[in-house]
Structures are given as structure tokens and as C-alpha cells.
Amino acid sequence: MRIWNAVGVLLILSALSDILITVALGLGYVDLRPLIISVFTSFTLFGIGLLSLSRNAEGAVEDKHGHAEPQYAPTEEDTALIARLDEFMEKDHPYLDPDLTLTRLARRLQVPVKQLSAAINRAKGENVSRLVNGYRIRHACEQLANGETVTSAMLNSGFNTKSNFNREFARVVGQSPSAFLRSKAISG
Image 1 (tube, rainbow, N blue to C red):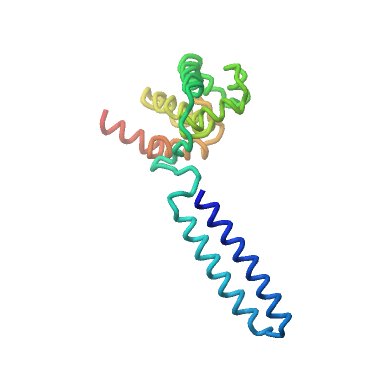
Image 2 (tube, helix red, strand yellow):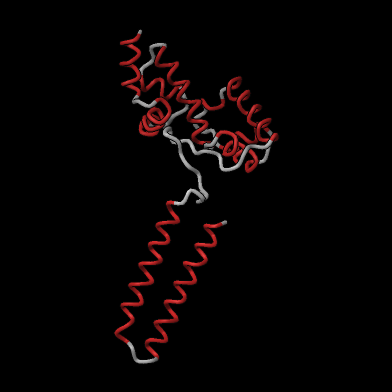
């Protein structure tokens, strides 16, 4: 709440600078206009900078793996829905479908799209795309460990493009697919 109060003060300062400029122009002090603008702009920018550094700023904070920390704790309903989702993902492997969408996933689970999306955001701290791609990457790792080529593992895991596959692989595993293969060859 303090942040909104501070934003309000900064907006009032901005309006005050406009009033002062109008008064200065009305009184014939045209040369004060740049000084007023400079002083108020500096204070406003300084205030915005402080606000952006505030721990009270609401917004998703990402951990070192790029997952957003949930802003709100998941409800019991969220937890139950996520358990159903996880079971569905493990049992039926819908993530292998490259055309899987949030709408299709929600339809299969028989829940509203917004409810599923919100539950994933709150319970998992990530969006649907990242969740699905996480399952896909874990599947690709199994494929690679079983001797599949990178391209085969990519296509067999529901990815359409190599660039998206490589980006998501690095996000989830922390290394490229070829580095993953090299590390498996060394350890195996």
C-alpha cells in the first residue's frame, strides 16, 4: 500500500510542477520554467527509482531458474486441480502434442481456462507454457538418454522449432542439449 501512496505523491508533485510553471509564466518569470522542470523531474525520477527498488513492490520475482515466485498462496481448490493436472500429464502425456493449448488442456480437465491458468500461476509459480515445456524437456532428456538424436528427441517431445527447444532445454536443464549429451557420455 505504501507504494501506491508514494506513486500518488509523485503524481501530485508532477501536477504541482505544472501549476508552478503556469504561475511563473503568468508572472513573467519565463526563465524559471527550465529550473522548475529540472527540479521536479529529478525528484520524480529519484522517487520512481526508489520505488522500483522497494521490497514492497508487487510483481513476480523470478528465481535463478526463471520461475516466478507465486504472489498469492494456492487455495485448496488450486492444489486439488494441480494434482489432477499432474496426474493427467503423467498418465496421458498431452504435452507430446505440439498443438497443445491452455484451452485444450482446460477442456480435457473440464475446468474454465482462467481457473486452470490461475491455479498453475499460484501453485507452480509459472505460466502454462513453461509448465508444459518442462514436461516436454523431461521427456526429451529421457529420449536423449535412450540414444535418440537431438532432432528426434525434440520432435518426439512436442516441440516444433529447434530454437524454442534449445531455449527451453537450457532454461529447464541448465545446459544445451549437446552439452547434456556430452555430460551423459562422460558420466555413463
